[in-house]
Length: 115
Image (cartoon, rainbow, N blue to C red; front, side, top):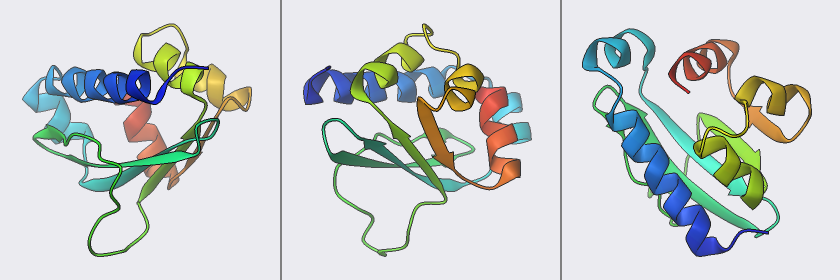
């Protein structure tokens, strides 16, 4: 099991990876969405926001408006790190039940193109 700090670092790396996506691709595939990431084995929730300029850094504090996230991800700590490091394919992880995403079908398609 990965540590909380390793998960924070992985989410930071994910933010950097989104920053590396060219502006044209982001404009084409990104719709502003709030995102939550529940790391199930650590029982911690991270919150972020996806938008045309990238992905805001994740935080453990819920949004002040109290609304549920548009895209909800549930994953174990080890799988989070493997996913961000490119060692775990998102589609296979979804089909295998290692990752759960609660989002609209359109959001799922957009995320698949970006990850």
